[in-house]
Image (tube, rainbow, N blue to C red; front, side, top):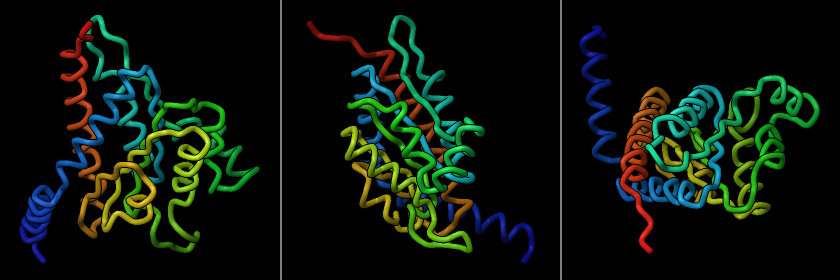
Length: 204
């Protein structure tokens, strides 16, 4: 295969994904995060591997990009960043408790959880089933805190699609495409929120 063939195929796949993304699900995710902001609640973000970097990137943008003069700031926290704490939970309680135990320290009723996973917790490799720590965190957030759960998934959505209140699925069986589009969606949602926050006014 020549480079040009690979390049053309990759961009053709991107165009296919754009045509198949669910715009209503993206809209629902935006509105859910906007509601978090209006209530002064916090959104916690989680992911493994490349999705962990997307969670951190998303938390950064939600915290800074959405700032509007004279308006409260959106509270966003990635649970993928405190390496000593993460390794302590993994060492003492196992990988599956990595995010749920952090939520028990930080989450309050009315907060939201945004879980990012390429396969949505379905499938496995040498280490066992994928992303069980995300699914456990989703269960903890919903059952213990009544949190709204937003999912970013890929492939067929996996278990996360069923467990989340809202799930935006990148419908293609390609890890690089799914991870790339999760970043596209992150930017789309963040910049849309910035405009909504800047335009928001409370009607007496």
